[in-house]
Length: 107
Image 1 (tube, one colour):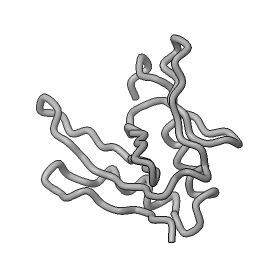
Image 2 (tube, one colour; image 1 turned 90 degrees about the vertical axis):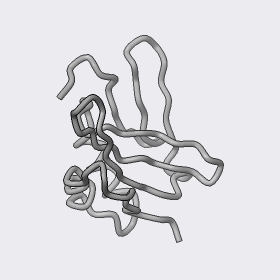
Image 3 (cartoon, one colour; image 1 turned 120 degrees about the horizontal axis):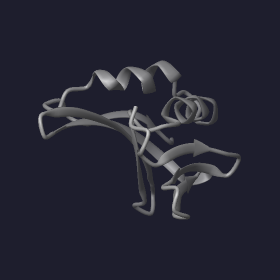
Image 4 (cartoon, one colour; image 1 turned 90 degrees about the horizontal axis):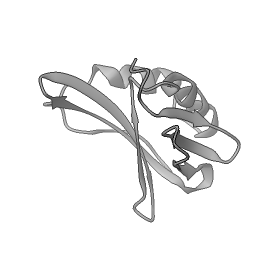
């Protein structure tokens, strides 16, 4: 885990990224309409992300190695019907050559 990375957290309003310098960005629960996962090769290291999306095109990347990821994954699994915690945690097995995986979509 990268201790210098922004902190991820979930609260009753939604999911947020706090950079520690007063800049907080996030997505409200009722706006989330899709959850995807993908991996990239960044300077020879694999990085895996879960991405929250909205119908308006807003996106929030949740890197697996940022503080708070597991707590946010737990909150997502409790708030989004049919999205399992295991699915969010196992997405870390994706490889950069794999296509993005759709983990959840609002019907």
